[in-house]
Amino acid sequence: MIKENIRNILIIKWGALGDLIASTPAIKAVRDNFPKAHITLLTNSLMSQIVPPKFIVDEHIIVSTNKNKLTDSLFKQLLVLQQLRKKKFDLAINLKWTSERAAIFTYLCGAKETVSSGPKRLMNLYTIKIKHPNGRYHEIHRNLDIVKSIGCNVIDENPVIYISEEEQKYADNFFEMIGLETKKTVCVHPGASKITKAWMPERFAEVSKRLIKNFGVKILLTWGEKERELVDFVLSKIGNGAIRAPQTRTVGQLAALIKNSFMFFSNCTGPMNVAVAVKTPTIALLGSSHPDDWGAYGNLHINIKSPLVLEHYSEDDEKKAMELLTVDYVWEIVQKRYSELTKGLDC
Image (cartoon, rainbow, N blue to C red; front, side, top):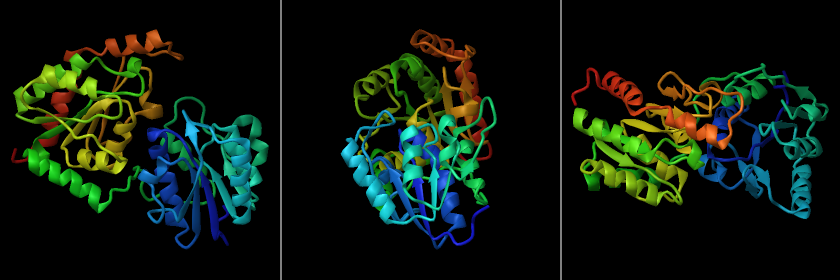
């Protein structure tokens, strides 16, 4: 418990979209518990779209990454470290607890108090050491446990994403132009970080067709870089009632489109975490991922886990896990959830 006399805080977190979003409840808890502190976030550029400076942190120091690893030269990293040391932090919090480089930055930044939960072989670098429970444990709680150890009370465990007025207007204008209504729009994101972790596109199309036929909804297909061909294929299989979303340029634009939708249906992927953050009821398909680690977080959402449960998955295993999620099985859950959500609404 070190909440006294903390005025200058460093938080370290870089990573992919889902990883970054999962850290936002912990970052927000630090802001809530240290409202007058200056908070610096050492992160990659993607975080600037999720938690920009002056939102719940004061400033960013940006490092370059690729697949969760730093790509900056050693000289650039030394310059970053020099910049950190000049700030004379009272407290450094490492939420990138799997990274040895992040642990070294935490230790060498010169903060009076340092806290994290890993990596295990570098735990002596911290003044406050956290041990996570063994086994399955959600990433959101792994981050929250770190900040709880310094006395932070957690008001809200739900992730957050910044949406600017311009980004929300972008989504509102698109819905108005196409004639979409929130309570009649289901957002579907068929893409994934890798093809073996994605449900078959024709199966997404079939469930979407059933939603249109049984509930009269519109299907809004969202997509990211290199997913245009995939979405066009799903669009062609669905036919009437499906709409391709515009290409979003920022996380905030995607978040606003999902926020304007009534329900979200996808693989376990970054946009799934976006949907959780904007509190759009989500149904997520998980093959090799486990709901207790990376599932859509919170009682508002449903995770559909493959019956193939292994300790470790090869790429063939990942593909098989998704194949075992049949259309009829998924449809029963999707239609039941949509019916629950619309019960009592004038649809």
